[in-house]
Length: 279
Image 1 (cartoon, rainbow, N blue to C red):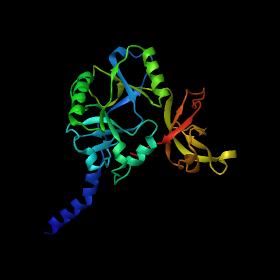
Image 2: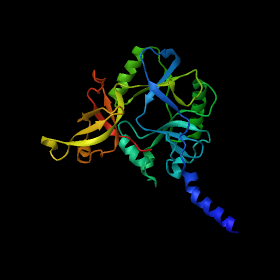
Image 3: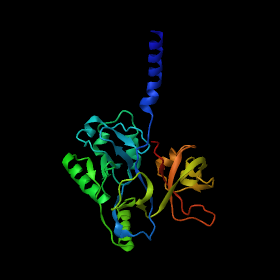
Image 4: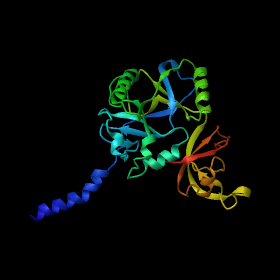
């Protein structure tokens, strides 16, 4: 009896660890597009400024493997087939989306405008072209307003790609994604998935705040940040007035955009984008 009770105690103590251990789902990850890629082998779609999400047929997860607390009504009718996609609220609305998705107790009203933009079938063994046709049928069969198929189409040249990129960027879009059509779904980073952006972006750690002047006296003037190579630099643009009053905290990881690098490796024209979503 003693040993039975001891085993029961150990199970109860270890249960939270087992129940909540997170394992990142095996997702395909992107590389940056280079102009010499053979575009006839790729299809293009818009790059959504959202949160990567994996539906395993029963539960919604982040890219890191954390469960997403979506309302029950929102998930009703989702297919039993695993889906790879992006939670999306609209262009330039990442901060609002992040606030909605991070809540452990979901706000039903806030989720009404959230879309799941489905772009692949991670457990399907076919080529991307074959998977996409089956994905199209899967999304159509679900008949859900918030489950959307990401539109993909062929692209024939770098010039055509750049024209599409300019159009998307002028409308507030983040960029484009290229998906190789003749390959199987293989997790990890490869040239099977490429991102095309009008600017480059990266992450840095906030290590200090610099006080503003003039209009921004007593508010944030610039962030002092450190990149992954230990280089320190300032970011003084890209902030809203609210973000200058309540700036990213020291210790936060931020995403910034830039246009090339200097001879010393520092980013040119670095501009704040957002605080990195903690998945």
